[in-house]
Structure formats: C-alpha cells, structure tokens
Image (cartoon, rainbow, N blue to C red):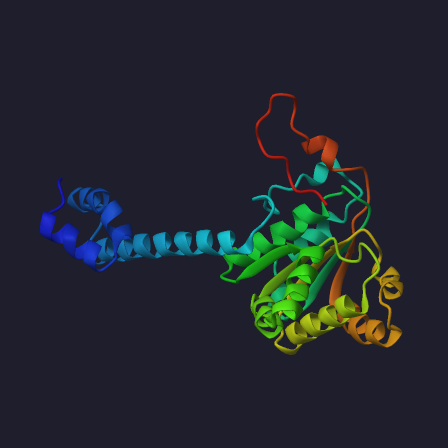
Length: 257
C-alpha cells in the first residue's frame, strides 16, 4: 500500500519519521487482522520511540569520543581467565553510576582496561547517561589551556557536566603543582555533584600518592576518591595479541589498555 501523500507530509512535519518508516508494514499487519486499532497505534508509537532512542544513543556515543566502539558484551573474558570476570560483569549493572560512585581499573599494560572502561561507558550511554572519554594527559592539557586563555572555569564546567567521565591512563607520570591542583578541582567538582569517574591505570591506587607534589592535596583528593570507588585489579596475559589484526586486515584494533 502506498502511504497517502498528505499523511506522509503530516508525519514529516511532526517529525514522526519512525512512524513513517514502519507505517506500511503496520498497516499490512492491521489489514491481516494481526493488530487491532489500539494495538496499531501502540506499535506505531513504539516504533517512533525506538527511532528516537536510537538516535539519542548515536549522539551520545559521538559526544563521548571513545577511541574505539567496543562493548562490555564484546570483551573476551575467556582470553584471560585470571581476570575477575564476575566483578567486572557486576559493574555492568551500573549500580555505581546510580549511587554516584567511581570505578578504578588497574593492572599491567594490555590486559583490557581501556576496553572495559569504554564498555562501561557504552552501557551508561544506553541507559541514558552522557559520557566523556579522554586520556588523562589530554584532560590536563585542556585545563592548562584554560589558564592561558582565561577559559579555565568554562572548561572545568564542561568536564564536570557528563554523568560519567572516563580518565584513561591515570597516574602515568609525576604531576606538576598546577596539574595536581587542576585534578583536585575537577574531581572535587564532580564529587560534589555526585557524578561518576572511571579511571584506568597501570599503577595501583596506593602508588598514586607520590605523583602529587603536595602530600596534602594527594591525601585530600585520593583518600576520598579511593575510598568511594570500586577497585578492580586486572591481571593476566596481554589481551592485545588475541585482538591484533592479521596482515591485510583493515579493521581497527580493539581498545585494550
């Protein structure tokens, strides 16, 4: 059946293209007796809701700026039996996000920390949350630029806004006094508003303290962060060899971290 031109235009004007895309199929179901009048309207509404939710997820994923599009469901736990699979899967329930708590994933290079962090971010997006992913060094550079052009307050507000901020490669090197102060302000601002952090690090959290030039700042910041976070030690063989593209494979390699 060809949809009436006037009806098609009306649906477009109302921005109901989800209904428009499935209208003919739903009309066919109704004519076949599979849908009553109320059911017909209900499924059309559900089609529109599904389209809008899909578009919203796509927008949030784009804003998150993930390195790779990976999911927690796509993580190969069998490749590294030593990983705490049950603990990681439990984080997938996102109770930490609801409670405004944080997650710390730490362990040696290549075991999949970045993949898991982005997978948790992807789950949060599917639950309607805004997420931002970035290397910690990039976040520090962004805030440093704010000192230079007097936009620091604005940049801090932007970084404090997402429900989940993923700081990849946290604690890689010693911090300058300014960098330490910037991290303190960022993490404190997010804690004040109950917004979650997901951190990945090659160092154990107890080894972060010496990276801060001021012990008082280190204790004030890290004690609060560490004591209110879910810590996952990820150890085992490198996840990277299992996910490395074979020669001639044009696919993008998985995030591993």
